[in-house]
Length: 87
Picture 1 (cartoon, one colour):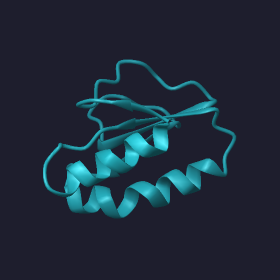
Picture 2: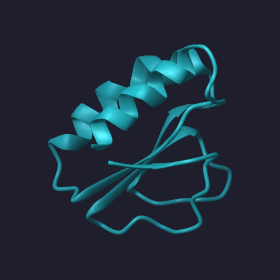
Picture 3: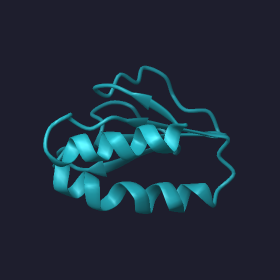
C-alpha cells in the first residue's frame, strides 16, 4: 500500500494498480480508481475503507495507492491504520 496526500493523483492507474480516493474525483476516470465517499465525509470514509481494501485484495492488483484522510478526529485513526498496513 502506498499513501498519497490530498488526492494528488495525476495519473491513470494501470491494470495491476488500484487507486482509492476519499471522495469521487471530478475528472479522473478509470476502472481502477475507487472512492470511499461522494463528498469526502470522514465517517463514510472510515466505514468503507477497510471493506474496500479487503474486496480489492481478492483481485489481481499488484499495488494499492490510498489517499490519506484529513488528519483530524477519526481521520487521524484512519491514517494510523493506513501507515501500519503500508509497512
